[in-house]
Image 1 (cartoon, one colour):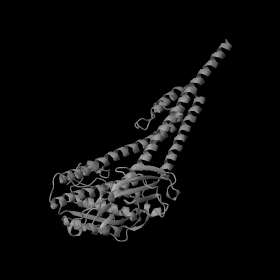
Image 2 (cartoon, rainbow, N blue to C red; image 1 turned 30 degrees about the horizontal axis):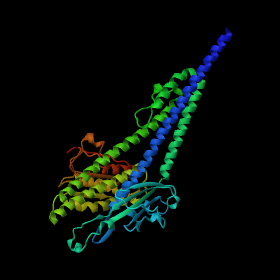
Image 3 (cartoon, rainbow, N blue to C red; image 1 turned 135 degrees about the vertical axis):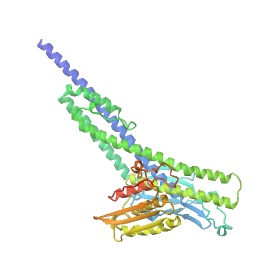
Image 4 (cartoon, rainbow, N blue to C red; image 1 turned 180 degrees about the vertical axis):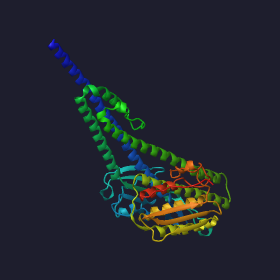
Length: 476
């Protein structure tokens, strides 16, 4: 009898060990599969984000190269982009003319070169990774062939006798490269985190299984099944309390928090891409419609001038939207370089008010500015100027003729407080919480020109300088 009991106990122990081993193997496989899926998805997103950012910036820079009777002009504010000024910064560009000669290069390249571009081909945008780029820095490079834009400034006397060069003399190529070390370091951190989390899951599962196999056998099975269903594509799924062993609760919370951050990032990217494409679709449609209207039949010079003027306004709006998108993209990727120097905020605010006073006077708006001199803050004057300009410009845009816009800057308890008030239509209470969201316009389409990005940039600049921003308004 005792021998039979011993055999049964031995068989039971053997079966329990076999089942537990199988379950632990499932936990290990599911953990590795989940970590691999998350890393592959993060890898794709990181590479795609850098490629898209480089392409958008390259297209924006290429658009600024124009040709008229005065010659070529490239209106790109390189000195306002410090990443292209210093050797070893990891940001480079080269612009080649139709003869294959270098037309412009970033100061950061010094006497170095990027890989020689391929033959010019219509729409032949290419992207490559450089393991050993300039200064020995690994880089991602985008190469864009384009035609220089012919610009008509409307001065007929200067244009007499001037003819546009042949099409082959308008073909330029732009190479843009960016440092990939930060991206690759981030991917390595994700890989290390996933490896550590996976090792923790497996280790804790084995320990708990050995100590309390009977108690944790069923919960571990449920946890394994639930973990196997986790994937970046289904960001709403989480490890609930009913599927987690008590001893593994802390790990499940860590995984759930990581999934929350990943889900939020994916959702923001999808929403941002959707809103950006929607915002740019309208001006592109306007450009196409105006072009088709002008090309439908021969027209007078005045008609062409009027049509091109409309085209120019639409292009300027697209440029403004693109620049705002680039600013917010740099904010999302933490790529902006703040100088963090003492700034006379009072002088900066007063100067910007004077710059827009002509706009206020032309629209019959009374603009008053009380900016206390000597109000100093530690920050970047470029972005602080953009903050003030966006706030004042938004107030002028929405204030009707005969209205008032008041700008007040003062020192309060060691902090600078900037207030911009206006006598515009006001903002409903239910809309006030969303005025700083990207692409949000009060009441939908208010009929005023704008991208809905200005106040989002204001909120980001304020947060980046350790400040806050809020709105107070009463409809009417």
